[in-house]
Length: 131
Image 1: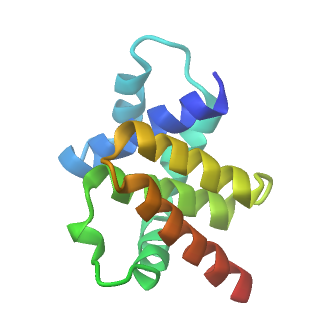
Image 2: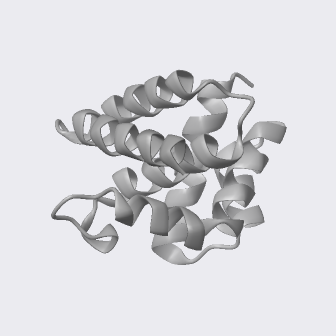
């Protein structure tokens, strides 16, 4: 499975977990639709779930005039996934993380999602560099 596909499926699983409190393993199984599991997909979903408090704090610090619970569910979970990659997956170049998140936002978000995601992730990237 390509990394882009793994990220898209991870976003779908995180969306399910966020909206319906689904167990991570069941959410992953559901989005795979019979396909073989992918290590990166599992890594992203479980990593975001395990680090959710830390990630949500990082995102909240970098939101202007917004609160995490007011964000669109797709945007919130895409930010969580990308913030997780920025903070905990050091082997992936930061620009790749941002580009992938922006492209996925164009597909799954609304008209403003990609610009919003880019803005928040750029601030998160700066925050991580300054700490």
